[in-house]
Image (cartoon, rainbow, N blue to C red):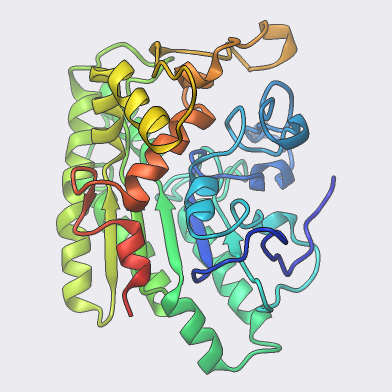
Length: 357
């Protein structure tokens, strides 16, 4: 399996004008870490390293992104001046160096969550991703001073999208009558705070937090007005006071919360209008029609040749597979989060956060 060189620069045509990007979370931002996890007696990691994943990626390569092309992490990176997301941590086969054009590292792992109660080895839980950042910093320290490292880290964006897997777990526990104070949303929020504090202690200062979108995905349509929705609401509502509390207690910590749920809900409510706003007014796409399907998956089942061909009009679908958005949907969301209206980010956009000194 091909691996990336450890020092990753932007393309010759696109020179990075912003600090580095460090990405954490789950399948919304994973760019291939799960490709390097091995099967074990528990099962196989969920991977997107086969056709039809990547059908619209350059050269139609299935990179491990749960998308037909680029994902959220890629479009945030592009907005920062990079060619795409920094490489998957597990793809790096030589020491990581902070050299000219250093883009950062992506630690995200599909199906991972905040909690690490059961270590199956089938994904990389958030706190383990934080440990991988610590390893990265140790590697970069071999050829850079602590002052250089601290400056780079404090100016970089730490992008995090997580919580979906944990909320499904809480939902299943509640349905089986096993909920307690260690398996509820307040405890999950507290655990999230522990991971963010650990990132801060390693040098992170600018946090781009993406909240949990609807849990009523193309595959989960039952009980969407009941417990599963209330869990998502409680978690997303809890992120705001969590971040405000961290900012008040940890000197120099700043943040932007991207409301992925509100954005996806707005698109779902008026799919044609939202698609046209971004496609026609921002990108000047000829014949733009917006979304025509925001409830069904473009690529069915395992998204493999045996499951049938994906839809042809992929730019008009919100869901690529049964859980994750299409490249087009990710592009729209990233645009809204990076430099959109205050409707979808608080207390500031990602762009404003990055530009702060």
